[in-house]
Length: 312
Picture: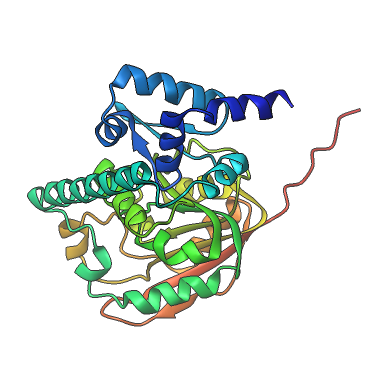
């Protein structure tokens, strides 16, 4: 009862309700929230601290910034937000300010990528059949997924595609510019049950067995150590959970190693079977998608973790 009372007390304040309503639609850092609400950073920091301590919001460190969002299990917060009047002038003004912020953030991130010559839409750059690839990935996943993790989520396109299937979804990426684009995409489409955060795919700041499905789309060919990346993906997957890997089949396009900084010229089934087997996953037969470069979709299932036998 004490926890419930603490949460109710934390939410029972106008500014904190506005903060909850905003973070229920996406993730924001303190400077974002100051700009939207027009209040000082010390004032908002105190409100955010109370909301985090009560378990209504969670902190997501990212470089020098900290983003705030609703935790996956914040049922009371969502019940409170469901009772708010969407037509309230103050809340509507907050939503408009947040939409302008998201658009500005996406434009800045896009400009940064163009200035540095990076092409963040790799499937378009390689002229790959994106719709066929997305359809194949969807068919490799269960009809419903409670908790999904997308590793190397980039601009958040895959999270958008998978959102209708998931109760909650998290995308991780090492690039802050990519994350800015992904946050803007998710906010624009109202996908409040999807979030992104900065993370290294070799050291995910996530608990063991925390997800029912994990996806890696067009990520592995950039990895210095694909076996280690797959082992880390398997670590956060519950026994019986599904791991889906989408990547290039073996090819002879040496130019991709230099022009696009690929580390690997595609993968074959034997490579994936060996790496996934070592990570405790059983690989099922793969599926090929034809195009200028052949793409493979691999599905694997996390095997039950054997219980240790106590020594006598």
